[in-house]
Length: 590
Image (tube, rainbow, N blue to C red):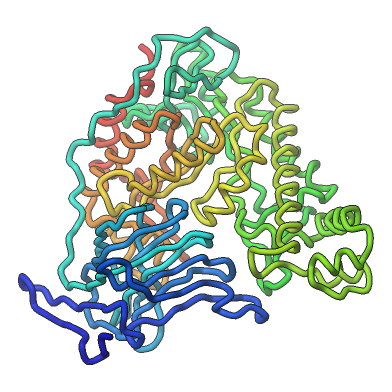
């Protein structure tokens, strides 16, 4: 047993290293955050210390209840503001983006946040090194953390953990690796609308003229005059973009596309993103244990009689400008609906009444319901008033709620697709643009989007590697494996610190941990990520978010192709132009 006094601090190659012994009970504490008072931490997540061969290990998992994260956390603050957490790890039965290591930032005893990096699944012992380089304002110490970002039935082992004050910065490649994507055929049969086709192991969008097409897009602003539109179009083309992202003003750009067609010019492929964040007169799903109102990513109640009508209104508004147009490449049925723990939201509004009918039809008697759920309700109405939800992902209550949540998602997706197909027959329809949070639940509900033609994902790279990380590639591959459908990236971008937009603590954006140092790094990484998306044979496009940087009274973020005042980020635009010109399916036809 290694005592607290045996904590080793040594100077190696000019950097101070602190050994973090896994077998010292005083060096690490297990942390899991359970929202239900009836569930203990030991029920929520398994934490053990063991020995695996020559390794003393911290083991975590399964994690089946709670929120935010489950982790082993160091007990002794380290004064370094930057450094590297190193060690070895292995995993068992975990999804991509589930296991992570890094630090928690402290100011005195106050926790300011965490800087964690997702580690790839690894069945064999594997070395890892996580660079800690972005202390939040006011931080004065760190403590190491290692654990899980997502609930899982799997496990992770950590061993040989060391924190060193040296930092290895990412070297972003000056030139992206060439795309290994198989070349498409010269043409496909022509058609009336954009469609998806598979050729060999590769997927492609296909234009009405039958040309294989890879969508390199950006969200573009609206405009008032034809001259202003032509200038914006020239700027897009100069950077190698051939598409308009889902947040572009389809009314203004639709008129411009019609004029381009009339002049014999190539229009931009246009995509439309719908969003159900603020539907008037329609309810949203909520967790009865939460005292927070539904937020921007809340899931709408698809059993609400108003939902089909108000969603059809969203569709009709866009359809008046774009339905039937040959330049309309596709619809996204929604943006970033939160699928995490939908099983805990099944008692909401009209959905809750439908759930009550479903459990009554299944169990028939209150006695049978109580026996299955381990409850003592006097009636089905009493159960509905109590709105019980499963804290632990086990048992009949969880399985019943989960099964109905699948019905919720299927009803929502089918309603959205039907509305779009009624308004715009023959158009491509992509799923909700999924966030990369709640990975297990997101993947679990993908099958309910079966009537969609393709899958949409918003993926903002962590920028801890040159190009996409192994985890980012793995999660996209898993989405394709489970659905068999083409994938389109609805939003992505790379920020940089030297923009000056991450210096104000009061307006610090969530993109801060993803920021690279300079605009040169930003341009190189943007080119590498662009090439990596194209390299994945099932990805049919990627759309940069957004046109201008965010610089408001509430938040600042270097997400734009242009500064907030309209000045271009020249390094970025030049790099995108260069990489787009080398990718099959991107350059417009002559």
